[in-house]
Length: 420
Ligand code: GAL
Image (cartoon, rainbow, N blue to C red; front, top):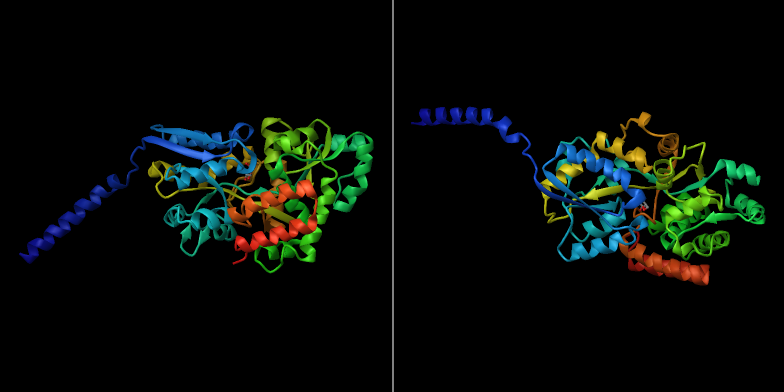
């Protein structure tokens, strides 16, 4: 009896082994996949390249590309919040690596742990350790990074600077020195757009004023926002604002870039999605038609951010979403997306021959610069702080009071538990 039973087990095990290849064969996916992001309009082509790959691999899935317009996700994030809290999550959504993900959605226990996917796909070895830390906690890994963007870049048109007889400023003092010369010629020194771009400009100015160590100290809670250093950063920001356009709040970031392209303004400080815009949408050649430099006073520093996509708990089409995440993390997906987007790959093995000269230089800088996290794009602080900071900025744009802004930031840091 025992003998025949063990014979039975051996036969069953052999049968299972034979059946196994069939069992692991991927089943054809069907139904929908809703991808939620703010990459609409001019920001759409890079996302479209990823969706193309997905559709080829999964012809049975209907992809719903749900976008909410508005740079840096100003509108999309509000819609996402309503949907998540209302129990209607999209299948997968865009979120910045860092505190925007961890301090918001992971903390609220709304995300699925992707550690098994990272292991299965071999991603633990291809994403930089520092980046995996930013999307992870001791309980898991919570999103798949698609890129690395640089925030502290100043853009210009070389031929225009030559015409106006000014050199690219390396420091804010150099900028203040050439600004009158530009104004005399009817040229705006620095183009600015709607309020989130003021937050964006603030972080470049604050980094220059504080230095990288103090910048990090703000976010780990060891330097107060209303310290003399913190107040000085706001003072410098106020001075820089004097050289920007009065109609900024009604412009999109692309419109501010356009002012530089058409020679109404000399410079703009924007993340390198502006390089994507000039290269992909405007068909300009990096290094020839447009130039770039680290924003004044920040050379050797790389103010970084990364877009990523996560899998919310309750994703209605989970299998389809996982297939999407696999493409985002793949070398093929990354090298299709980033050259169009104006970002570098988050993977360490990307094929740089596919990237233009701006991106090659960004990749080189990322490898050697001091890397610090962006506030305006989710790395440094959670949504509570970011939302409050936007209000502090609105107040500052009206009142231009550095002490009051610094004090309000410090209160906000306490409330949002910065550094804890
Ligand atoms: C950032 C995002 C970029 C780009 C930019 C402008 O927050 O990380 O990928 O979309 O906003 O909308």
